[in-house]
Amino acid sequence: MNMIEFKNISKIYEDNTVALKNINLAIRKGEFLFLVGPSGSGKSTFIKLLIKEIDESNGNIYIAGRNISNLKSSRIPQLRRNIGCVFQDYKLLPNKTVFENVAFALEVIGRPSYEIKIRVPQVLKLVGLYSKLNSYPHQLSAGEQQRVSIARAFVNRPPILLADEPTGNLDPGTSEGIMKILSRINLIGTTVLMATHDRNIVNSMRRRVVELEEGEIIRDQKRGVYGD
Image 1: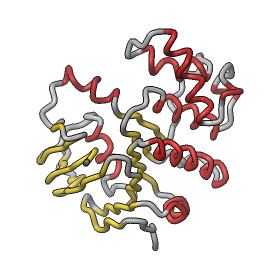
Image 2: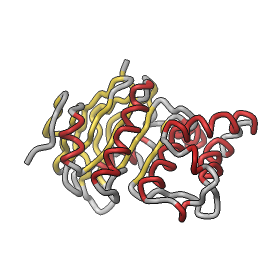
Image 3: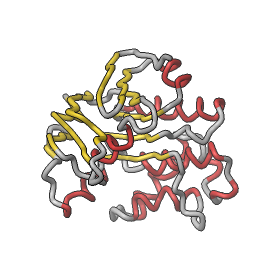
Image 4: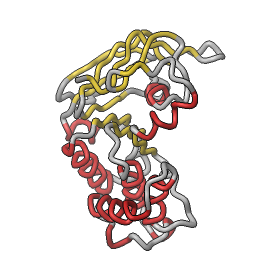
C-alpha cells in the first residue's frame, strides 16, 4: 500500500519560481525515505504540499489512497492530525513543561485527560526523556528539545512523520541519537519522510534516497547514499 503518492505534481509560485516540476513518486506504508538536495531544490515545498500549507499548481497528491488535492479547508485539520511534523527549530512553548508541551498536541484534538496522562509518559520514555517531564525548554539541551519535538509529533501515533532538517542545529553525536529515535518510530510501522542536507546521516542509515535538483527528481535509490 502506498502511504504517499505524488502524481504529475508541479508547483509554481506567484513570482514564477518553479519549485517542483512534474513529480511522480510513491512512498509505501512503513517506509523510511530521505529527501535530499541543495537549498532551493524543492524539499521544503514537497513537505508543505503534504500538509496543505500550500497548494500544488498541477497534479494530484494521495495520502493512504485519498486524494487531498481538492480537500476542503475545513478538512485540513483532520488531515494534519494524521501527519506528525518535526522541524529544525523545535517550536516548543517556553512557558510549558516537557509534559505540557507534549500533552498540548493531544489537548487541541480533544483527547480526554486520562488518555493524556497515559500517552505522554509512554512517548517520553520512547524518546528517552521520561526523567525530564517536569523540566522547561530552557532547562534542556538542543538535542533534548528536539526529542520533545519528536515526542509531540508522535504522541497521537500518526501514520506519517515528516522531519524537515531535524538535525540541522545539532552536533553529530546528538544527531545520531535523534536518528535512532526516528528509526525506532519507523520500526513501529510509521512512514517517515526526512528532508536533510546531512550526507553522513544519509550514508550511515542506507535507506531509500530521493534526490531533488531544481525541482526535479534526479535520483531514486533504495539503500542509497548522498554522495558528492
